[in-house]
Amino acid sequence: MAEPLIGAAQPAAPDLIKDSTSRTFQKDVIEASTKVPVIVDFWAPWCGPCKQLGPLLEKVVKAANGKVKLVKVDIDENPELAQALQIQSIPAVYAFAGGRPVDAFVGAQPESQIKAFVERLTGTIGPSPVEQALEQAKAAFAAGDVAAAANLYGQILKHEPGNPAAIAGLSRCHASKGDLKKAGDVLDTAAKEHKDHLDISAARAALQLAEQASKAGDVGPLRAKVEANPGDHQSRFDLGLALLGQQDYAGAAESFLEIIKRNRAWNEDAARQQLVKMFEALGHKHEVTQSGRRKLSSLLFS
Image (cartoon, rainbow, N blue to C red; front, side, top):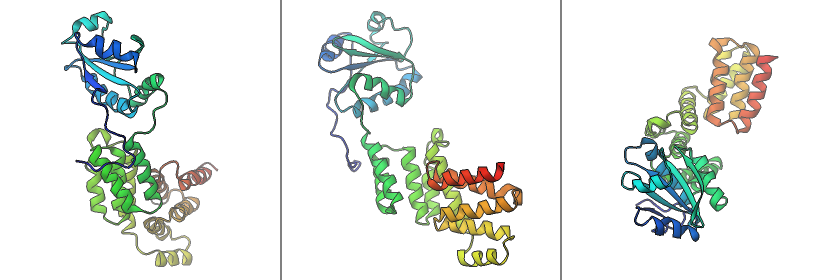
């Protein structure tokens, strides 16, 4: 059993999500919706989009903490219900309130749209326990408490295996401690469909930077070389990598920007490419990314 997440909600009521039939639909949906809104998911075992939509519906309904219920109806087993509501394609989702349908949509939808659909019935849904734990882990990592961050990411992955944000975060934790092999092994657990997820891509870029930084050399001697010969772009480039290894992102950015200022095309545009990779690893909200992009644009388009 997974460890309880910080801020985890209480277990869902046993009737929060249930299957229904033509015989029980009146009680499960019509009567129940006079007390709390009921969402009805009309699906079939052969329907691929239904299999994608179902888990997302359950996740959002659980996050609403009892403000709405979910009823699932297999139309192959209950065709008369599909006929009564004139359902022509699935998945079809109906929302009932006060004993009557009040909203609906057809086809698979992203989680954000499902959440908006449910919020129209219930009001704003707060962050889920996993979302809360992810924010806590990110804050811990940013504050330098790598152990706490790694523990939280580990809890998330026990609770929700394959979560791409948690995989990326745990990889960053290992990389920050110098265990680059383990960081890579964690990234390799990401599902195929998550290989290009923003967090996974950023963590992969961060790992590549860490691997380069580990081979760059010491900051002191490299800085001395640059001061003795400002035109030594290779030493300045290596200095940037070494500064990355010390998490001096602003210093690393200045090293790469200085190379671009002096010789944009040096080593087949290596400094700009390295800078862009660093921005990807840090994320677009990081202050070094934002200031670095402005400076880079100024150099390239001046």
